[in-house]
Image (cartoon, rainbow, N blue to C red; front, side, top):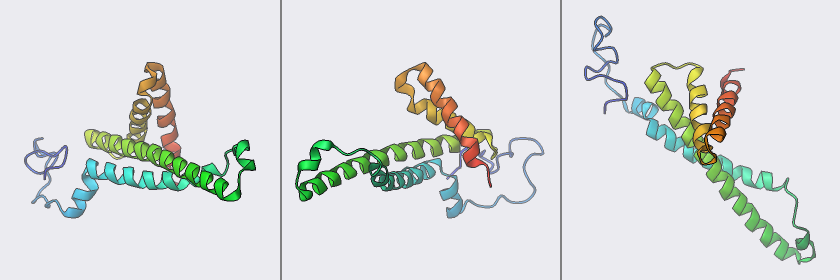
Length: 161
């Protein structure tokens, strides 16, 4: 396993004169592989986002207006129709959150690896990529607004406290 951005010498700065640290390079452990693999991080965010979105489906369903034609139906039929609607909303919200979570975490991970820095710009750039990617079907103007929206939303979420 060779992490993204590492040279063949084992250290990112091995090819730069005077850049490699003294002593042996520690081997990659299983823990590091799980934390440094963008694919694993993306799959994990996809799964967690899907579960979170599926749990939000029933919550948001409670705030929607009900169909007036269902009021005259028997209670059992109303409950069956409502449970189908809740399941449908849960699937929809689950898919949406899964895609957003997976796309954002993968783009942020690739940006962090490409820049070799862990700072506030990684979520901003990752958010821009995510917003632009999600709005790609809407054309260039939608991509710009999606990029601005997601990258503007990232710093308040990432700011501690």
